[in-house]
Image (cartoon, rainbow over all chains, first blue to last red; front, side, top):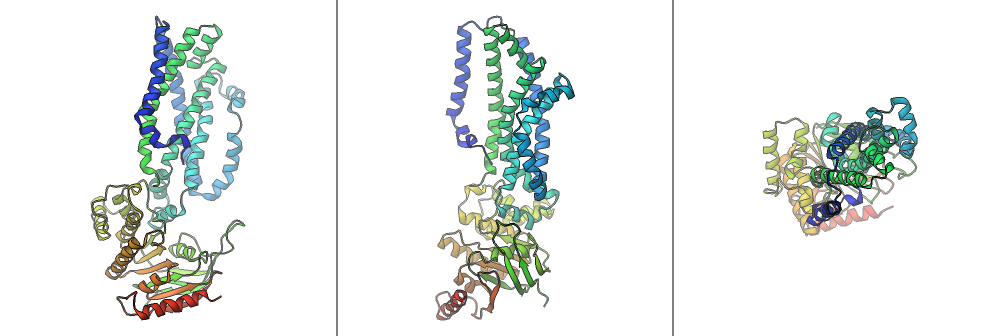
Amino acid sequence: MYHGAHRFNAYRTFRHFAVSASLILVSAAILFAGGYFVNAPWGTITGALGLSLSRLVAGYLISLVLGIGLALCIGVNASFGERVLPVFDVLQNIPSFALIPIFIGLLGYGSTMIVIFAATSIIWPIMFYAASAILGARQELSDAAYVFGARGWKKIIYYLIPLSFPALVTGSIVGISIGWEAVIGGEIIAGTPGIGTFLNMAGESNNGRLLAIGIFTLLFVVFIISRLWWVPLLHSARKYTEA
Amino acid sequence: MEPIVSIENASFRFAGPARPARGFKDVSFSLFPGEFLSVIGPSGAGKSTLLRAIAGVIQETKGRIVRNFKKPAMVFQGHGIFPWQTVLENAAFGLAMEAVPARERERRAREKLNEVGLSGLEERYPNELSGGQRQRVAVARALAVEPDLLLMDEPLASLDSLTAASLKKDVLELWKRYHMAVVLVSHLIPDAVELSDRIVIFKSDGSVQKITPVELPRPRDARSQEFFTEVDALTKALSMP
């Protein structure tokens, strides 16, 4: 299952790359012309961004493991899926920021809280996209896997994981964007060092220059991650799709 | 001779109110090694469900299906090949599940692909193939495991007439060569007459109306008077309430 926006042909075109790269370059040119980059505190910005990114990656990895695990359990055991999916449906609809006081109460104001908070936001698209791919697959594929001997762990390795791979990529892309919000929001609320706190402090002190550089740097990192990681993964997932 | 499949008053009913009322009911017949048996009947009569029950994908809810086969294989109406695998990997899938060493399974898969006319397409993905080629991959995958029972669920239904005729000819040749038992589900009476030793006719309520042998000598001439007479008789039987 794919999100409609993740159709592969759009990502394969040079135009897609050119438009997104142009956005970065135009932003950089405007900031450069405005003198925003002169004596910019790059060490502070990259350090803050590094902290936020590491929390995002940690939260994503936790979500990925749990999300795949749950999706596979649903794929292997249909009655398990029937029981848990309605529960997950309710849970994913709870606004995650409404729960942040609970996370702070349990885990304090540090990185662990932000990582776990982000993970609880990222997990839903990964799990739901993968589970939907498994449950929505043509019955013939599942029957073929069974008839030709893909049962037990072989069913997971040779059938369920490849079947859900494109959905995992799409779910991850959606999850990561939600994760950025959770990490930055969590940092602002908890006052934990990171790009969220950096942007918040720049805004509170009416320092538009730092705010602009911070947002630009974040945009640049998101663009690089997308081009180097998600777009190639989307391309490789293309072969997993039906005609 | 011991039957390879023995179906004794077997029924299957789908669970849940959204499902059709029944799959099949009170079905009884036996299939013998090397026999080519076709199952025909109206849409929704439970033919494909019966095939899935024979394969063991679903379990009969009443009666008994005795499965004496060792290696089943199945060809599906919509081919059922895996989009994430190449033609070669698909053909070798069953062998991989049997833990056949990589070199041996590649050799056997290539051999079967050659037999179904797909040499040179081994590295392609299913979305790069035509409908007929995909169905041939499905046949190669089934044959690669050297099955003693081949289940075919309307394998020709989604193909154009030329491709269907060509694949039908290949299936018949491969059946003769490998002497496996075949169950073919079809809604095309001429195909069933051309290929089968016996034909099971389903009624629309999922029960068996009649089991009839096809006495025509092989190879069968689909343009002969005897062939048309046989087809007409079955058509009449199928249209009876």
